[in-house]
Amino acid sequence: MIRDLFEKQRPLMTAGCVSMILGFVTLLLSLVDPTEILGINRWIKPMKFFFSIAIFVWTIAVLLDQLKGEERFGKVISWTMILVFVGEMLGIAGQPLRGTTSHFNIGTPFDGAVYAFMGVLIVINSLLVAAITYKYFVAKVGVSTTVLWAIRLGLVIFLAGSIQGGYMAAQIGHTVGAADGGPGLPLTNWSTTAGDLRVAHFLGLHAIQVVPSLGVMLERWAVPYPIPIIFVTALFYFGFFVAVLVQALNGRTLIAI
Image (tube, rainbow, N blue to C red):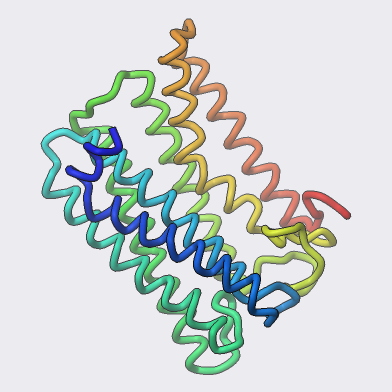
């Protein structure tokens, strides 16, 4: 399957490999460069984004590969996403290199322009995913009905997470009830003293991997009544996403340490 993906979806698969390599490069930089921004090593955030983007574009490669007769559509989506993430990571890695934050930073005209540019790119990426979601409701696909519904629901929850991310961006901050940059969980740095909108955002975006994976497992294990199980699981997943979001909006931390 991986060999086929590199043959049919080479741009996204290659982009994912490059992003994964850069993730390990920034991981090494975080070990040798002690510089901190808002109390966390400046390379941690680029590292997380490089790894996340690699997983995301590989996921999109799998989804595009299952759309039948949509090769031109797939090429447009693939190359547009690659350009989007090149621009996004220039901001996410470039701003820490300058000694400042990449997100929610409007401290200077330049910082504000970078932040606005990144916001436009993410809107474009969300629209691309919306286009893929539409195709999965109308186009021919190479998966079973069970996996198809899992993919559809995962994509819909992903879009909900994207909308929530837009709200977070509009607030010019991710912490509710405190300033950004306070005490946080290891690696994720989710606030341990106040509400953190990034938790729900994380859950929403990764539904694109979690829910379809469930569909694949149910089919592989020949579980009876897989589609109702997928709908119920997706509903609970979405409910948890909403609950975590409401908790953050009320200024309550997910985990207090």
